[in-house]
Amino acid sequence: MTEFLRLGVNVDHVATLRNVRGGIHPDPVEAAKLAVLAGADGITAHLREDRRHILDADMERIKDEVDAPLNFEMAATDEMVAIACDVMPHACCLVPEKRQELTTEGGLSVAGAHNSLGAHIQQLQDYGIRVSLFIDPVQREIEAARSLGADIIELHAGPYTEASGAKRAEELQRLVDGARLAEQLGLECHAGHGLNYETVSDVAAIASIVELNIGHFLVGEAIFVGLEQSIKKMRQLMDVGRGIN
Image (cartoon, rainbow, N blue to C red; front, side):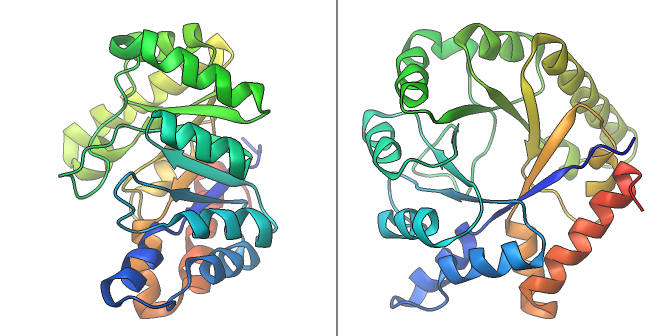
């Protein structure tokens, strides 16, 4: 297995730290630039409806100032679709969003929201934006994503990263099976949520997955070793899992 595995670095929680005090520091856009220099293949940022971390201006600046593809995470709403069509990112990842949650808690219910998602996906694609759906590794959700015409799915890796022992092995197999089905259906497959140094290599070894999106752990680790070093170590572990020397 030698096919390169892309790393998307999520800079949301650089913005979280900035917003705790207000002002302009630390700047998530500068973090995104540093991430690219450290080996990130793309930048992910989630513009939430409540603007708790990333702000509208951050999205515009990342798109304009950072020399890497922007993956615009967002809820499937008219407001967010309009903003995305103005910013024109490389891709949009549609995620479930609840005001009371600390972070995204689960995959999007694609099969249960088929009618409402279709128009949003089509509008984004009409603007030349690739559309990804953040979903659990469940057959009916993956098949629903395909029927809606999504370009990509991002498998929710949270249950795998939070499990241990036999349960972790079971959750890893769900990711393997989900990624394989996506490939069979012609969907590009990504994975993300909760990945860290301990868990990333086994997911990186799944040949059908072509991109991992990682943020919170990298920003947290950066407190101790710096963002550049945290990303470089993650990249190294991904390469080990992928079988790349």
